[in-house]
Amino acid sequence: MTSRERVLAVFAGKIPDRVPVWLGASPEWKELAKTRAGLKSDEDLAVFVGDDFRRVHATYAGPPDWSPDRAFLHPGATSRTPFGVERTGYGYGQPISHPLAQARTVADIEAYPWPDPAWMDVSRVRAEALAWGGRYAVLGGDWSPFFHDAIDLLGMENLMVMLAEDPSVVDVLLGHIVDYYHRSSLRIFEAAAGAIDIFFIGNDFGTQNGPVVGERTFRRFFLPHLARLARLGHDFGLKVMLHCCGGFFPLIPAMIDAGIEALQSLQPDSRGMAPAGLKAAFGGRIVFEGCIDTHHWLIDGTPELVREKTRETLAIMMPDGGYIASPSHDYLLPETKVENVFALYETVREFGKY
Image (tube, rainbow, N blue to C red):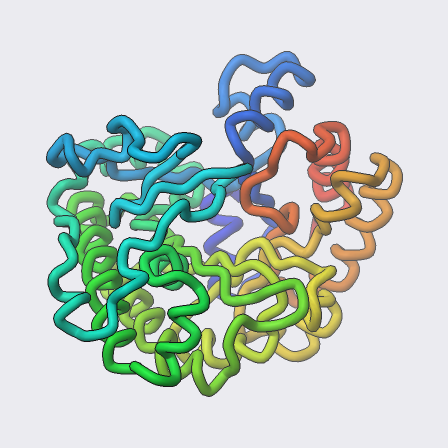
């Protein structure tokens, strides 16, 4: 099987020749890995570990004042969201300020200077996707972290209070955010029709100890927006995969109802996310990806421990298909031991065959 055939077989509920694998990593980790393996490019690294996925992105081409690359306003800022929130800190970091922290009315939300999705250049996405010659499963679409954007704009405490006290304001806020992502992805899919396989989106609705919100609140405020994005992907014949960190077991039925077909980078050390429990409760209903612990095994362990734990995870998740192997972190950081990550993929190659 080609990588693309292998991945799509899993999404179709069929048994592939072997368990597909995924590698998501920071540029810093990739540099360490390439040096360790004597590789020249990120593509060389993807081939080396057997990554079955490739990903394409639109690029910003709008007004300079909204560019993610323009000079930062806050000292120490390292990134900027499409909605103008600057962030700082390790990895993706945390918001430095909350521009809508004082917003209390729908008019306050409407008055915010919302970005235009037409500022994203989609002209090269199709050619980039086709350049792999149909060998890999291609991920595309806007990342669409609407829950995180709401937190960035309002502040976490404000958002939690407003879910209870000002639900109409939250509805309008989420509507504006998801309108942007929906139109951005629509433009990508129209430009790259037939060249992308999976609509890949990300929102972290879990903490280490359970969901950020209960299922009732999740269904009221967030499920409709997930469902809207999932319908967009399905309209273009795409599979829909959601990245979601933490312990969110109680929300999985709602995610399935929303049309999500795969959950990515599952963390087995979070509450309720043990692989055996996930497989027993939802096996055959949704594709699982991840489950090989980055917090402990890949950072603090040895290659021998990683091989052992990877084999244990495969034994649980492989039966009847529906599993993609990867670390439990979508964006490996430099503290993650390269030799341990390589041991993961070597073990899947050896023991992940059907």
